[in-house]
Every structure is written in C-alpha cells, then in structure tokens.
Length: 147
Image: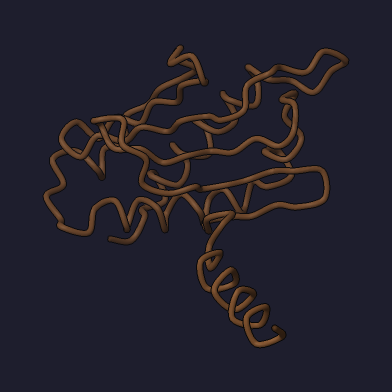
C-alpha cells in the first residue's frame, strides 16, 4: 500500500498535535513512550501516553476496512517515512529523553518501534536492540575461544 497525499497530510497533522501537547519548555514530561494504535477496521490512529491516556486521534480514510495481510507492515513503512520527514519536530518534544513512539495494533500489542529519540541518537523504524542476540553470541564465542 502506498500512502496517498491525504494520508501523509493526516499523519503529519497527527504528529503536530502530539508536538503541541508536549511543547519544549523548562518542565519536561516524564512520558517514556507514546503508543500509536492503528485499527485496521476503522482506520483510526490514536496516540496514548504511558498511562494509556489519550493524546490525540485521527481517522486515515485510506486505512478504513483495509484487509491486506501486510497492513501493519505497510502502516509501519508509511509512518516511519513520515516520522523521518518530521524528525526535527519529533526530536524536540518536551519529553524527558529517551522516549519512543511504538506502533501497536488495536489489541494493544506492540508491533514495532517507530521512532526513538535520545540525546545523541535517533533511530527511525528499527528496534533499538535489533541484532542484539547475534552480537551477544559473537561476544560469548570470542570469550570462550580466549580460555
């Protein structure tokens, strides 16, 4: 699924509303994650804080009753592209770093990290710990060889 111009605009407005709720000022919010829930049936996209309190919502018409098997993969790709385009806005939220945006389905199951902001690091569309198992296995193997 390719994002229409209207879909991109709706997501940008959605992200701008989140930025308005967390302006950069002297008091930073203690939110650590913003959960972005997308419903395949209704096309609704809702942002929640750590306490499951709603931040904002919108309906993406292109996603209403979308029955694609790879729906969440497509949504992930569309969102990460839009997040990358708006990274200056998203990296300057009034939220204590590190914080992340997490994509969830309508059953509150985490699907992927969309955006992670830390003081010196921004990761868009990839998991923070991606490849950790491989790195740990290599490290362990090298330790075992040294004995």
